[in-house]
Image 1 (tube, rainbow, N blue to C red):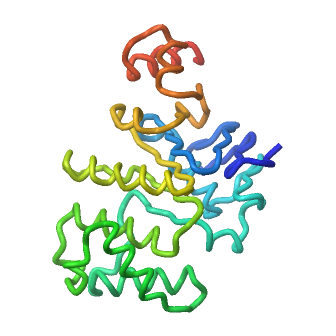
Image 2 (cartoon, rainbow, N blue to C red; image 1 turned 180 degrees about the vertical axis):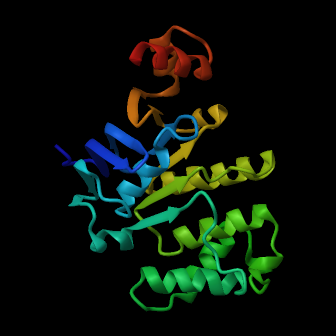
Length: 241
C-alpha cells in the first residue's frame, strides 16, 4: 500500500503512560509536496512526526518512509528534522553547528560546500563565526533549518518551525520551504497557525491522535461548508466526535 508514496502512515497507535498520543492515524504524502499537519497543541502532531522520523516506535500500525519500513537508520541520511525547539550547541559558532550536523548525516565526511550552501540558503553567511548563544531567537530558527537541510535530504520534517518568530521571518521561511519543494524535496510541516495552511499543497487535520480530514484548504472548506479554514476545523471536529 505504501508503494509510490514518500511517506505512508497506516493505522498508527502510540500510547504513553498518561495519554494515547496517536489513535489509529493514517496518511500518505507524495514526493515533492508540502503536507501540513494542522491541529491544536496536544493533538498528536509531534508524536506523528517523531514516528515518521523513527525516533518513536508505534505500538501498532506501520510507517514507511522512502520505501523503507521505519524505524530504519539507513533512511535517516535522506531525512532532515527540525524540532520545535532548536537543538543547537550554544557554545559553538553558527558554522560549527552546521558542520557538525553535516558530519553526522554524511557518515563522518566533512562537506564544506554543503555547509556554505546551507548558510547561504538561510541568509546566515555573514554570521557564520558568531557564537550561537549570541543569536536572536529568529536567527536560531534559521540556523536550526540550516542544520536540518545541510545534507540535502529528500524528506524534511518541520515541527512548528515558525513558533515565536516575527511575521517577516515567517514569510521568509515559507519562501524557502516552497523553493525546496519545487526542487523535489518532500516536506511535512506541523502547525496550529491557520494562515500557514494555505501554503501547503495538502492538509491533514489532526485532533486527539486521529486524522479528521485530509485535502487542500479549499477542499476542506468546501467539505465543511464554510469560508474560513479555522471554522472548517471546528465543523469537521464536531462531525468526527
